[in-house]
Image (cartoon, rainbow, N blue to C red; front, side, top):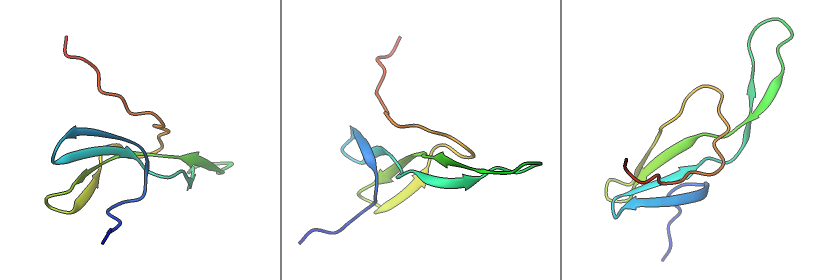
Length: 72
């Protein structure tokens, strides 16, 4: 059987025990005068061994294409 672990797009497997992905876009409310809503998406990581996800970015962000960069 299949079990849904997380909802996301643009997943990148970094190790057998870590998947980095982009959360689905959602409306986030801006604060201050003239507040409005903007579309945001965040980077998150999922550990399939622990069956837990946690956010990597916070606040307003729009990370739509995660990529692994080579070390310098």
